Image 1 (tube, one colour):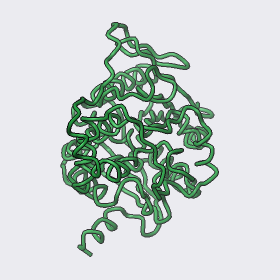
Image 2 (cartoon, helix red, strand yellow; image 1 turned 90 degrees about the vertical axis):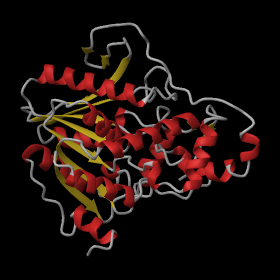
Image 3 (cartoon, rainbow, N blue to C red; image 1 turned 45 degrees about the vertical axis):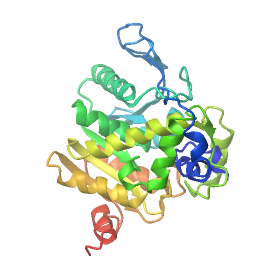
Image 4 (tube, rainbow, N blue to C red; image 1 turned 180 degrees about the horizontal axis):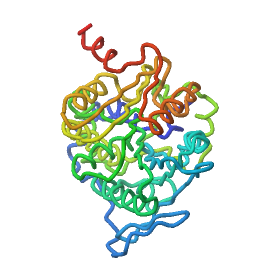
Length: 343
């Protein structure tokens, strides 16, 4: 399955192959990474059935999976890079059968939003999350409200929470995007900077990258056919997500809240070392109550892998009861200690 058919940001590595060889040519040009501006039209944030209107009149399309029976909790879900709200179809169907309503929106620049394919800025993504959280809290009142972020969505949540406390009952981070520049190879950092400041509008695919984001091949093929999943990523979008990942890692040193973190041992998108650094930060920052599970057979797309039912069961149990059954040997803290040679 070609990686260019996937909703992932792993195209960073392909920069190294092309750009370092042409560095002397690239530095002769000059450009800046593009950040798409806000609409600027003021409006009162509004929650509708199929979309939410932000304070600048921008519309975020919504998908809902309503709880069967009484609503025990609400989960606001944020997708990863190049994906959109339908990424949570399996999660929504599973949790709704456990009395949990799931709401997912297409983040700015993705899915069905205006100016999809362009980077709208980390700050703007965070502002949208703040507005969405307020809208759902007003709508659902005292019903427990949780945030769930997959990959880039997790980075948005971490960065936003550290800057502004949100009225939520807990956070679920699924393979959060925290591959900060500090843990990237130097040549990847150089290639990214050169590309972002010389050819920011160039679109990259993942052709030639041997990366496996999931063991669910049928699901990956379906993503390849989905016209709303972005298949080629602008360089300045990769630059923007890298800035976001830097911010997310820094934010984890003082991110507050009750957090469940999930990671797959076979994740080929977000490396284990920065993920364990995130676990270390969250477990020692004094403001976080952290539970962390590692799945031995899990890949990056945990909620859509072949073993997704195990992951979904753990999420449902944690949201409903704040309990963490997990599986034998699934303690992420133990895994990270072994990775760091502390066993």
